[in-house]
Amino acid sequence: MKLPRNARILRGQLDAAPYASVFFLLLNFIVMASLVYTPGVQVPLNLPVADGLPGTDRPTVAVAVESNGQLYFQNQRVTETEFTNRLSQLARKSSEMPTLVVQADKDVRLETLIRLRMLARAVGVQQMVEATLPRPFSSTTSP
Image (cartoon, rainbow, N blue to C red; front, side):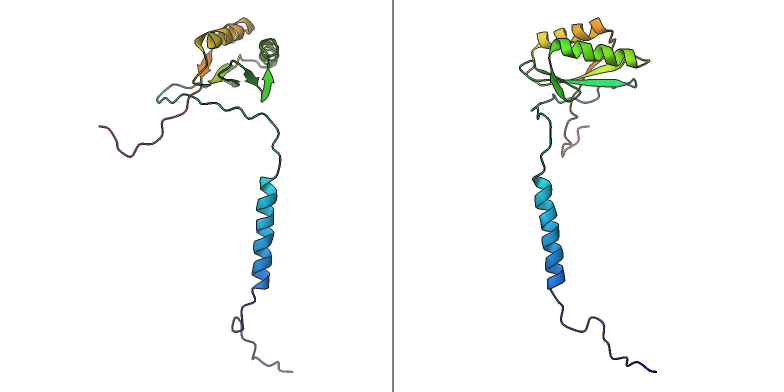
C-alpha cells in the first residue's frame, strides 16, 4: 500500500495559540517567583571601597555591624553576649581558630570596632579582617 506524499511541512498558516500559551506560562512563573517571601533581615550595609588588601587562607567566620552598632552573626541579629557565646562554640568545634571577617558599615564608630575586637580576642580569635568592596572599573587607566 502506497501512502500519498502530499504533506508539506511548514507550508501552512502558523498557529499562534501554542506560542501564546507558552509565553503566558513563562510570564506566570516570573510573576510567582517575584512574590516568594525570602526570610531574613535585610541589613543596609555600605562597605568601604579599597583595592589590594590581603585576604586570608584560614577558615573564616563573618559578623556584620550596622552603623548603630547592631551585630549580625550567622544571619541573625545578636547581642554581644550571644555573639561571644556562639563564637566560642564555633572555636571549640573547629580544630583551627577561624579568622573573624568584620563586615562593618562605613559609618561604624571606631570604638564599636575596638569593642568587637576585644570580644573576639577574649574568645581566642587571633586574626580579624575588615571586609571591603573592590573599586569599580574605571574607563581610563592610569600609567
